[in-house]
Image (cartoon, rainbow, N blue to C red):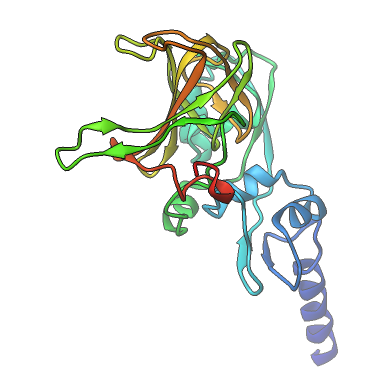
Length: 259
């Protein structure tokens, strides 16, 4: 009996350490999230969401990561996004992202959907990074920096020199919460929500290339640069907001990009 018990214990340990089947992984020396995701056969974005990780997705030795195993669901008559979210305990936004669905997120009978195994309770109890990892939305020369007076007047972001038609990139991954003509000075404007009260804005665009509700990755194109609105030359206005209050991009952009 003792021999059988030892054999069973050994088989459990082997299964737990098998990258193809493990549901938890203890980070070892030199491991990266991308390497862990590749060995586990689970998309990096799904593991990141399950563990509350934001870019640049840093992990540390000894950290215990949940490795969610995906399921699939074949859409039947009467299925709705709300019903699927309730059935699997997962926000339908995450299901939509996993399947590349765009607003208004239509589903059809017979469609096979990936169901990321990210339980609400897992996301809720996992500590999240306090702020996104921001990068430059464009490589142009700084024209005007952040200026803030005692009365909170001034210039709430940075202006960057562009050529009309240049690609404007998402400074961090997030969801599009505005993509239209601005009623103020920015002309065409895109606003991204990065969670935890963080937002970025991209103004004076010649063209908007994303739609309301889209999810974009860091570095993905969100528009084409221009001189719309009150701009007197081709330029990109970029700013960072925390709880709707302007934050100086200097020191926030990777490698001091706002300097």
